[in-house]
Length: 63
Image 1 (cartoon, helix red, strand yellow):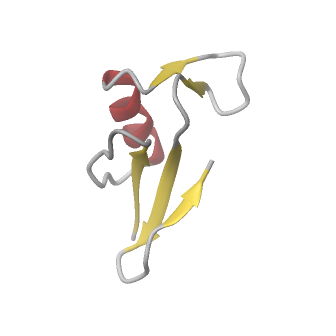
Image 2: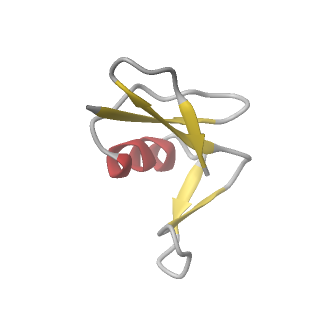
């Protein structure tokens, strides 16, 4: 099962079951904002990424 979390220089979110939940965490933490015009649907307000991992694999970054 894939898990997702946001990571910025200042904060790291909890692992979530969906990419959208990780993005919502970043938005609530004011690390990102929703942007319907962006291809991803959101924009980082600070340098950040959504990390992805499989339950048994180490985390990898997805920007």
